[in-house]
Image (cartoon, rainbow, N blue to C red; front, top):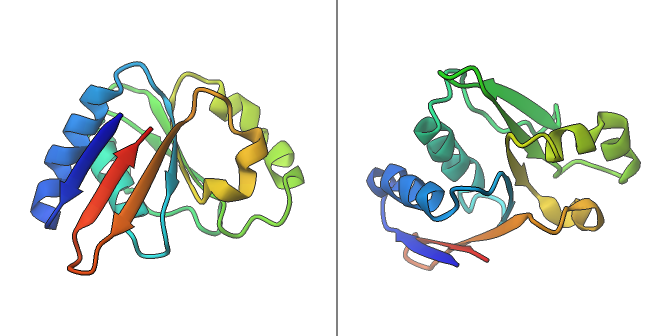
Length: 138
């Protein structure tokens, strides 16, 4: 279990580092939260800590972005907001990504719940009234 509060963007990299320390063996992460809650921003911070050398953006229209790291590893970033059916995941070959042992960051996993492996770490990002973000992982 991981829980952190982010009061400003200046804290996000520290929280990302602590998050990765709390999940040293995990590679599959599903991010839940409303539009604008900070899912992509937190994933950018995680990628920064993982030494991604590519530009990190939300793969809203592409479904997946593949990022390279300084250590020649790949990180997969998914956004399933616009997915219409689970068949699109089969066409994408999702199993090759989810079971690759590379980091996989998934936005809008609600739409693909039946296909998420049991070892998926589920993270909720909630924005409070004052703009603070609460990040909880189960």
